[in-house]
Image (cartoon, rainbow, N blue to C red; front, side, top):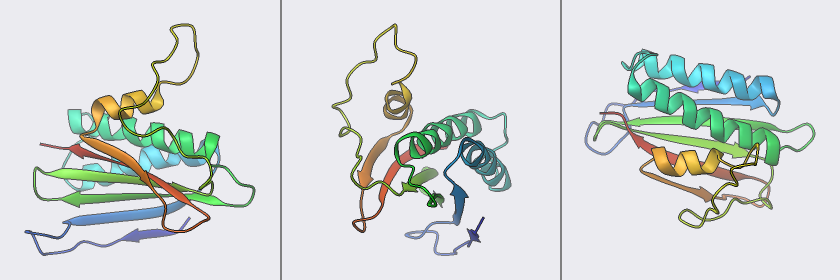
Length: 152
């Protein structure tokens, strides 16, 4: 597990906190992502049992679970990044996995989940709880699913 924690000081344009970690693309790795996000948010001033804490934990859980289920490649990890911005304040959550070829539907185009289905609601929750979300790809080997949530 590689961890990068770096605070910054420019309150007008830059983030006030950054946390990044590589985790194994396993159910344990997804569970650890959720716990680490809750801990980091607590350190930044939002308690575990706050509405912001619960929302962030749920968003990280959904994105990390999707990285494990749909972005898994043997021997490759996924990466969780949290960036705290003072405006709002707001948090950007990014989960990068090893399957650039498996992109989710675009925001606003998610099909509704069948009432009988046992899965298929994760990104619907992300769309409902986050202010914005989407996907990016910086290289041909990975994709990042991100969302932004107001903490205030």
